[in-house]
Length: 74
Image (cartoon, rainbow, N blue to C red; front, side, top):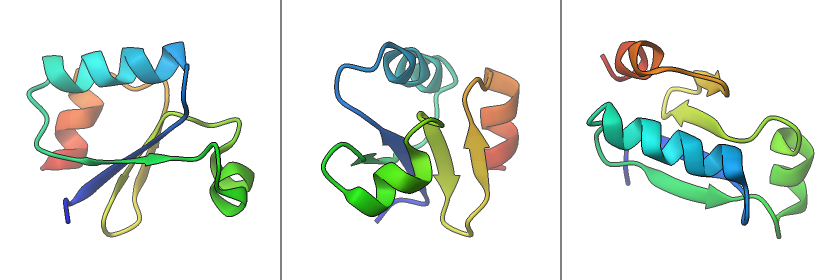
């Protein structure tokens, strides 16, 4: 399991932008969690996606930038 999870939904242009930014940042491996079919995740993240969460519970809500992503990874 990765240290990070990106919460996202299908057909989400902001999620696509977040994925491109993570690639630009050279971000380490992360897991994807799709909230669309999970009632609990939908309730928690529905209007906030994409959200990048570190395994210690620290979350980074969109919009984030390369500097914020690198700071979360360090």
